[in-house]
Image (cartoon, rainbow, N blue to C red; front, side, top):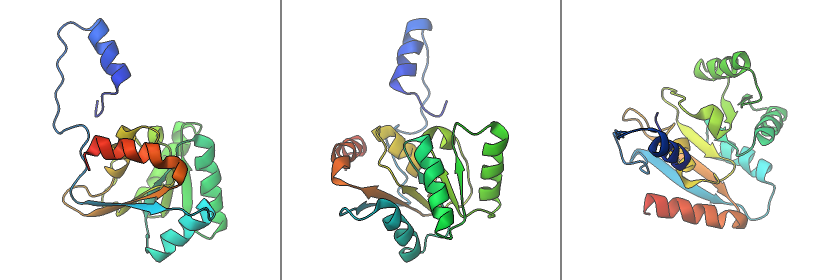
Length: 180
């Protein structure tokens, strides 16, 4: 597995004899090639701020992460109404629908893939210029996985995270995990 959440580690320790863990990188590292930026929200509409950010920062292609499936579908529809080429990918879609959304994104027929963490785990997309965290992840480790979708294979990438005052404790946990 690419990840070993604490729950899985506890199960492994309980049921396996002398399990071995092989790590190829520290679990809480992000690529040096990823420029991650916090975007403070001042109470203005979060969705409107996202669409403005995509346009002003000239983000032509990105995975946009949300914490909940219903937010993923709703945000994808919002972006479409705003004239942006977006599709959603989450666990309530069947495999064929998820694969169709992913294929369209990989083939540049879709510019923005709105996703949950579960749907995005293990996605390998060549040359992804940007990741946007519409919601700050509830678990700091998920932040590392999200931004790890960009800045791969020696290429640079950006990670933009929309942050409200209510997100402060989650941001603090991310900063502690990443030691910065």
